[in-house]
Amino acid sequence: MAAGLPFMEPLHILGSGSIGLFWAASIRSAFPSYPLAVLFRSHHKSRIDDKQVVVCMQQNMRPRMAHVPAQLIHNSSGNNSRPIRNLLLTTKAHQAASAVQSILPRLDKEQLRVIVLCNGALSVRDELQSVLHDYNPQIVMATTTQGVYQEPPDDDMYHLEHVGLGETLIGGMPALGQLWDQSGLNCRSISSKEMEVSLWQKLAANCVCNPLTTLWKLPNGKLWEQPTFESTMKQVLEEVSQVAAQALHQGETLDADLGPQPLSPEALRAFVEQVIRDNAENKSSMWHDVRLGRRTEVDNLNGYVVRKGQQLGLDCPANEELSSQIRALAHSHASEG
Image (cartoon, rainbow, N blue to C red; front, side, top):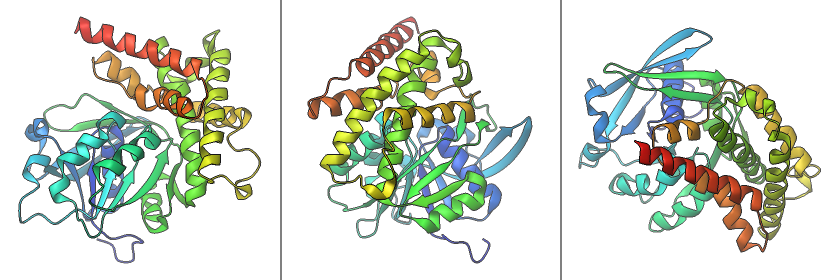
């Protein structure tokens, strides 16, 4: 491994979807000997050869190959395994708590960082607090607007399509953020207060783009063609803005250092529109989940806004309606399958 890297500690990645594999492959492409490993469930065993998997990343019609170290979760808890001190969590939001529970014996009780890089990260953080109550971990929040989706793997490798170069933010770990940036992940480190705002901004984008691209079966860039898009986005963002302002005010997280009203409906709209432009060709993971008859993350996105709003005495009918529509659509596809 190259000397002088800003962050040189081993990194374990839990989540073998598009973001987890993209992170691992990007880091290993830039630094081929960097000590990381992706943790896979047993049904991936056939594609693990000599303790590694091959990832093909496609960008602008140009493929890049990366060899990524791999471990099977059920084989990674033996006495000879090094305790995990830096865990990058990239699972689906609704799978995060159970996934972390599955590797509890491997986690270092004395020194543990969990870096959460999931859609619905605010919801995931709440769940992790109870799962890891005996570990006293440092939970680090990260977010990205990188547009990546995963094609079905074949017998030899995993296939990723990188369709939008977005921005990655990490709260309070500048050394790791610098490593990610040097790996081509366009990352910068920000304060914890700024990260709270960024997480609500990312949640707002997911609450708009994920359900609507799924319901209308469109990539992000085509949303503008739908006649009800403008009004639906406006209603969703007004609700997210109200809930975020109340939640952050209660926690005394938002202050004047962050500039004028970064979570106003207008500011959220500008953020969401930029995400759509940056990832115009992206097909949301929710769309793929529904198509494949899998559970979606809607309860950790729009559903989280509804639940948080209820706690704060706020109604969120637009987010509740989108949640209901996605659940119904997912149920119908699962029944057909």
